[in-house]
Image 1 (cartoon, rainbow, N blue to C red):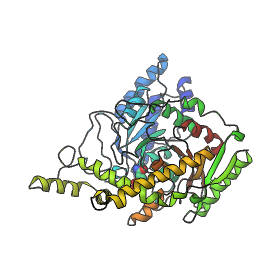
Image 2: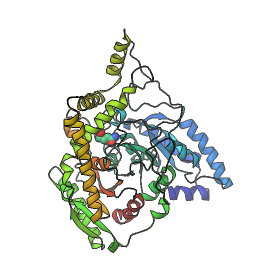
Image 3: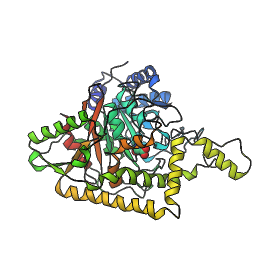
Image 4: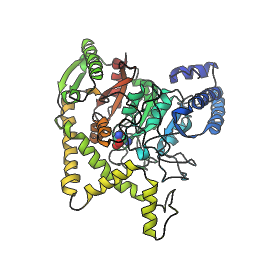
Amino acid sequence: MKNISRSLREIRSGLSSGKITCVQLVKDYIENITEQKDLNVFISLFDEEALKKAEEIDLKIKEGKAGKLAGAVISVKDVISVKGKKLTCGSKILSGFETVYSATVVERLLAEDAIIIGKVNCDEFAMGSSNENSYFGPVKNPVDKERVPGGSSGGSASSVAANMCLLSIGSETGGSIRQPASFCGITGLKATYGRISRFGLVAFASSFDSIGIFGNNNYDIALLLEVIAGTDDRDSTSSETKVHSYSVISSENFSPADVKIGYASEYFEEGLDPEIKEGVLKKLETLKSKGFDVKEISLPHTKYVIQSYYILTSAEASSNLSRFDGVRYGFRSEDSGTMEEMYVNTRSEGFGEEVKRRIMLGTYVLSAGYYDAYYRKAQKVRRLIMNDFENAFREVDFIISPTTPNTAFRLGEKIDDPLSMYLNDIYTASVNLAGIPAVSIPCGKDKNGLPFGIQVMGRKFDEAGLLKIWNDISD
Ligand code: GLN
């Protein structure tokens, strides 16, 4: 295993002083990827191309023409398009499918000289909390190989934690960046809905989906955010809100007396691992002793988060996934007579169990007789949950909670119990229902040495605030 620096600042100073080269850096990452194949992280590796790009960037560095992200080697969750490459979404149904265009985020990364080293494993169509729903098999947690890395962006989290790349681009619908970041002991940012273009991200639940970042520190994440955030003509939900110089802001500190931090009592109730509870409460005490105004708040509709999240996202998924029919993309069942049989057989054979469960649940809650009782009701609850946050953010600037109720569980432990799997999203899914930004920052380890994160939630479009408060939370 190569001991590669986990900081872009350090890597860049090595590159500019000539101590290392991009080519060597990529070779080192490839060695780490090859040596840890058993973690099952990469679905496609772009080794040759990455080395070629590294040569070009080394030249640009010499000429003083390199972009902001020179030296950043990045993996991309395989639900995001990279032109000319396979796009699997962790599913059999996309077998053999290659994309003809790149996602906006990918274009923006490449324009600043990032190197994309490959596409990483994930739960099928980003549905899951353990990466066990992938057609390509589960990813293992590098901290403990008997355990899950979290999901759905399990490959992204493992790739960064196992030092196979510096950063990773993942996606979130209900916690898929923050939860695996917490399980693998790294950091993850989910930006405000609309902050980062979704163009080129395969849709799961369009009113929830957002692209986000895994990394090792706030500066690296801030710099990447600065590059990929911002409006995009190809995504009508992308926002025109100003993109700040996040990387500069990430080195600043708040004066504690100006900042109010809330913690919701509902996030510390039954079901929370006592060691995590203690770790997060201790952190709150430290913040208090630094002079921050820390107080208890209430998010009264928290108990409806999981129900409304799973009703609404399944409804949206059932519609979004109707395009995978054996005609337009990838896999088609050979065993088909009529066209209808072809649709049915393709979808029955091409989708995994969890995806089918969601399509059926989603179709059910949208059906004429049940629409009002489930879908419409869940929409109303979503509004109440948004209101909870709006009210809370009138009182405080940030809300802190655990990221997950438990540390990484064992592979196979929850796979036959969807409800207990869904309950993993209890502290994260509310953020996606409300569309606000949040980060997970490493907070501590339990008695088995398993990491857990602390979650910080902010007002809409206050990514800058999250990156700044980070400095007081992580030290
Ligand atoms: N675990 C959640 C789910 O299965 C979140 C997934 C996600 O954020 N993509 O829906």
